[in-house]
Image (cartoon, rainbow, N blue to C red; front, top):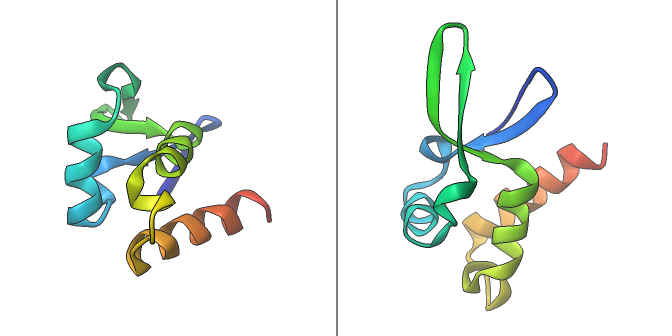
Length: 83
């Protein structure tokens, strides 16, 4: 789910599980959703990885009894970052 392009580590909202995708669109700061031009395509639903992790930590999704899906995603991202 995490992508890297020219040193920019990001997450595409469209690649997230449906329940998390909806929560991101509804509660994520809209000015933090960025566009990345990659191979002549414009990716309009990108979030910097660090912003996504911060959002996960701040939302009730993560802080109050996280679902297995959210926990698994957060753990997978953490393993990628700290390898």
